Amino acid sequence: MTVTGPWQRTARAAGLLGADGTMAPTIFAAMSALATERGAINLGQGFPDEDPPAEVAEAAREAIARGVNQYPPGRGMAVLREAIATHQRHWYGLSWDAGTEVLVTAGATEALAATLLAFVNAGDEVVVVEPYYDAYAALVGLAGGRLVPVPARAPDFLPDPERLAAAITDRTAVVLLNTPHNPTGAMLPDATIELVLERAERHDALVVADEVYEHLTFTRPHRSLATFPGGRERGLTISSAAKSLNVTGWKIGWITARPELLEAVLAVKQFLTFVNGAPFQPAVALGLGLPDDWFAAAAARLDGRRARITTALETAGFVVNRPDGSYFQIADGSPLGLTDAVAACHRLADEVGVVAIPVSAFLADPRDRSAASLLRFAACKTDAVIDEAAQRLAGFRA
Image 1: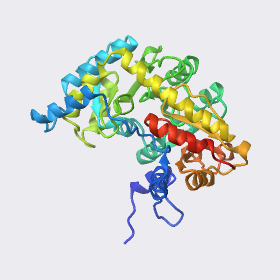
Image 2 (image 1 turned 60 degrees about the vertical axis):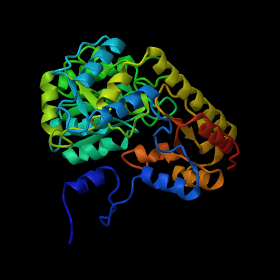
Image 3 (image 1 turned 180 degrees about the vertical axis):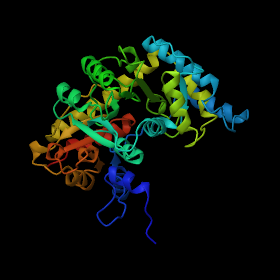
C-alpha cells in the first residue's frame, strides 16, 4: 500500500523525503543518536540539562496536587494570560488585553503551526531569513505555501536589507522573523525590522516574530516586534517558557496579537491540540514574574558557558562567531581544512566525544557551499558538562 498525502509536502519541505519516497530522520535525531552511540557530549540539540527555578517546579507540583489536571480554558488559564500580559508590559511597555489578545499554545512550534495554517494559502509565499529553524520550512510546506529564503551569511549572519525588502512582494502572505536567531545567535537591527514592517504594509503581508530567546541576550536587550511602528497592527509575536525557564518539555508557549488576528489563529489552534499543560500553566505564570535579576543572571551564565566553548574551539583552530543571544554559536572549520560539516560532526563525535549540528541542516538547499564548513554548538548545559566539552574540543586536531 502506498501512503500519500500532505505529509509528503511537509517532509519534502523539511528535506526529509528521499527520491524513493522514504523518510529520513531529522539531523537532530541522527546526531542525538550518534551522541548516545558514542557516549559523546551532545552540544547539538538545543535543550538545557538544568531544572527550572525551584519555585517554578514547586508551583507545578502544587498544581497537580490540588487537582489542576483537566482541560484548561481554550485560550489558556486566566492566571497565565494575565502573567503574559504583565510580562509584556513590564519588559516592553506593551499593553495587551489578557482576555482578547493573548493565546496560550502547546509551545512556540504549535503557535507557529497554527499561525501559518491560519494565514498561508496554497501558493502563498513566506519570507524567512536563512539559515532558519527547521520547523519553518516544514510548516510552510504543510500549509501549501512557498518558502522564500533570504540568506544571512558569515561573519555577522545578518540579511542584506535591500535583498530582504525585495523578497517581500504582493505574493507574500507572511514574513517570519526570528530574533535572537536560531541557529546563529544574531539579533536583527532595528532598522531591518522597521524596513520589513514598511514593506509588509505596502504589500499587505503579516509579520510573525519568533522571540523564544528574548531573555537570552548578551550584547543588548531584546526589542519585541509590537514596539515598532506597525508591529502591533500587522504583527503576531510568539514566545514560550521553554528557553527562558528551562522547561522545554512543558510545551507552554503563547501568541500576542490584535483580536482579529488572534481569533483566526484560535480557529486553527483549537483543532490541533485544543489545550495543553494545565498544571504547568500556573507554574509558568509564576516564572514570568521572577525578578529581573534572575533573567539577567541566567543570560550571563549562558554567555559565560558560550565563551568557554568559543575559547576551546578557537584553541583547536576553528573560527567562531560572537552571537548576540540564544543558545547557539557557529564554528567555521575551513581554517582546519574541514570543508564538510557533516563529516566534521562525525569526526568530533568519534575523536573527542562531542556532537554538533551541521548548519547545512538549516538551509533550503543543504548542498549550498556557503555553509559547508559551518557547525552549530549549543551552550545550554551545566558548567560541568561545558567544562568537559571544552577540554575535549580544545584537544581536537584536524
